[in-house]
Length: 112
Image (cartoon, rainbow, N blue to C red; front, top):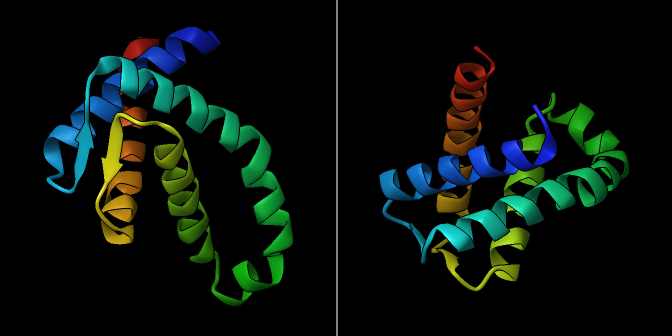
């Protein structure tokens, strides 16, 4: 599956996640598309650096600190996109978990 189709399917996942969570608001599909694009860029650039810098803390928490890093990346991407609003860190955490599950299901269905 190529990059553009993954971004498009991820945007569908963002819209569905925002629909299911009351603390996450998406203005429209273009905002979800831009968010998905920025999220993928941040996941390939900033996230590996954060993981490397926080290895001792990640080992100490048995990997649970990676949830915090995922939520932080989601909040940074949402802050850069004007049409996506996340009310709090807790909603960003739930959004991160739900988006991961939905994207996994969508990508699995799209492969078949």
